[in-house]
Image (tube, rainbow, N blue to C red; front, side):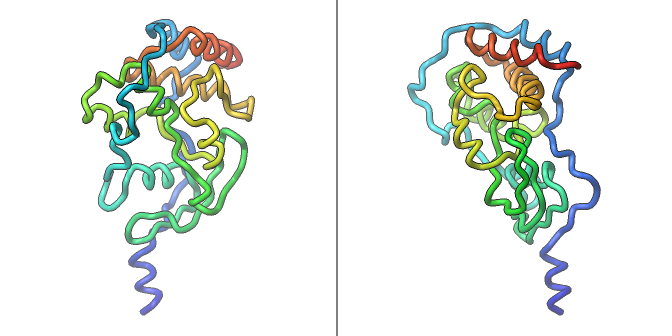
Length: 203
């Protein structure tokens, strides 16, 4: 009886985890995207709040965006009846750490919400900002070590990059693609930093 109840409230996700967001472009595509982005001075933070970007929203059944990314990026992930992860393994590509407690993992907005606000999202509707904050179709959300995400804060690549040098190429491609997908501007120093990281990519 207890086993049956446990089976009813716990789901084991079969198959290998993608462990990466979708839509990461090739070096050539990322370069083209970067070249097309508008360079402009950083906008004001006036009026900004995280509540202006509603998240996490329900994606399917009882699963919200955070829970969906935890399942996508982890391996052997088990969830309870409310879709909250109860166990699994998560590898954080930013710092190379692996975690077994979902509480040690944050879902990073690759392009932070405040950075988006300063780059053009201040003029968006709340609905569009909600879509951005919960974007599962592109490389905007990724599971990483919580304190690494907190240290990143709302910084752009001119002041923060992943400590794992091997991941900086991928990080640059994800950042560029997200800004391109959402038609966000970038600063001169930000573009220079992205170009430097992109130059390290082999493909």
